[in-house]
Image (cartoon, rainbow, N blue to C red; front, side):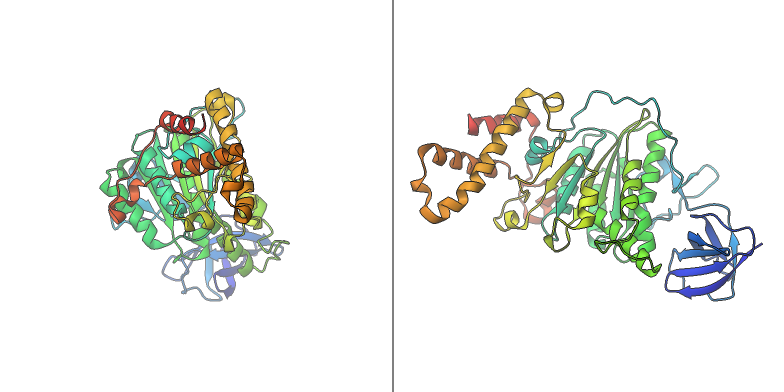
Length: 434
């Protein structure tokens, strides 16, 4: 028996079911002649289904019939999606024909993969990014997560595009890109860049940019993850997963919580913020079939790195790259705060004894540099002891050494980009500090 719409408030539609209550995350179809779809968010006593109007369709009215579909949001997956741009519902956004046909495989985006019980982690494999500051401070290890944290306009998207350009070019695995609530212009530029570099043949793209409603912005990361899981589990591929921007995912979930009249937590975010982050991050994992290596940008509202949402996401990362506005104002690119950037993967077992010992020496010099800056501002550099003066000069050279030109910016500034192997990076540092 069908349900009946009893209220419509913005994107929230309440439907009454006297029997045959739908399941959470099931799609309902409104009988209005347009096939409007609603997604069941949660159920309340008395057979009331709280639903979300996925496409912001305004042709839903009180009293209309809501039919169960007995299925959730299903998107096309597999090789047919490579080179395409899809939205959260699996519809193409690239102006090319829809993905349909008898041979197309579909996957329910909310269906979790089977748990792995006998998976053992293999020897860590380091992927070279060609970016000195990343290869040295936050080694890019297959199957792990890197977070790029920073406020607006400090270079998160440029750094992500450079990583896509450098790593995808090597042809190691399949690349995924999830655009979550960011600017449409940036998505378009990324698509054109990948097209020009002939990298679309190894890339799947999912977009719900800031023009979309919060339902689609909250779902796009889940849809992209579900598609990546298919390639990992069914086609046994290794995945490079890029997400820009994970904070916008929390922001979209927060907007939904507001229109659903949920009471916020102490930090002002939705009460389910922890589970929202945890469930998505746990799906971006590796198993015996293949690996998912992810790079996720995290916007910092008002440059406040202590923001609860930033902290929650940060705790799920193996490595954190912090982009600083103060560093950017000095003309240093990428604008990485070398003292706040850290990685749990920077160990002798993973990067080797040589790399590890160099990192300890470099971090000590950079911390000393920070402490000496205040003294120099008062008494001047010439008043320092010879040892301090030497260390201060080395630290300045190191900071300059970690700057480099980006390949993806060449068409904008006419300057050729740089690519450094990890060996080149280590040698350049040894020349400075030895």
